Amino acid sequence: MILQPKTSPSPCPSCSQPMTLLELPQKNSGTVALDLCFHCQGIWFDQFESMQINPGGIIDLFKLIHAHRNDPRQPLSGTLHCPRCKEKLIAGLDLVRSGRFTYHRCLQNHGRFTAFAQFMIEKGFVRQLAPAEVSALAARIGTFHCTGCGAPIDIRTQSACSHCNSPLSILDPDAVEKALADYQQKEFNHIHRDPEALADAVLAIEKQRQRQSAPETGALVGDLFLSGVELVCDLFS
Image (cartoon, rainbow, N blue to C red; front, side, top):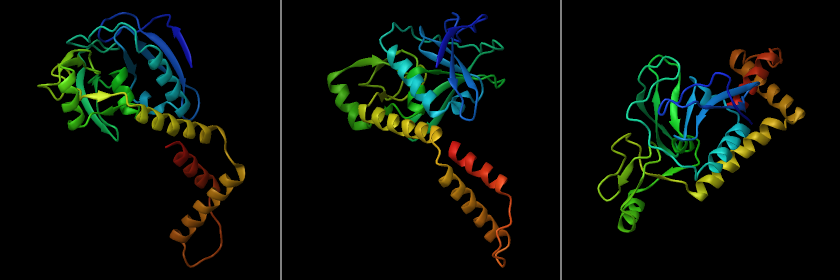
């Protein structure tokens, strides 16, 4: 993980202050360069960069976000602008196993801006609160701040943020432990490859291909390169 100022830093979509460049390892090779604003606790992803970070990079980014968890945070601006084309960003909503997460995207496909907490929902570190949990919290805590934009939410009357529509979520230790274990295992698998197991897997793929294309012949005459490419794609998916 390389954290450094850029020679020509991109402006934050919310506060317009210069963002900080973060370089993380990419899934196949090279690095992914992200822009972070610690004042607004948000990340700018160019197009599909969020999906290109390898498991070790996800862990590094989680640790960095966790290290800045107590930094002063300012609420996001009512209107966000793309740091590339300056056009207004449009609010978006997506669904993963851990729940719904929100973001703001550029209509010109330059990228998207995601709050730290929403990114952690996307990657499984944060989970949404169940209705019973919201009711229990409402009896003890009237208002807390949205993880998406920082605006106050009165959980006695609101089930989501009225400003950015982010659902109520919590940094659950069990969810963090499970997500970390999953990414650590993926990173271990990414680094440590068993050559014999890899060869066996390539042969197995090719045998299956042969049975589907020419079931009447028992000969193994195929393209091991294509099978190897297929296997590697599965490993990185």
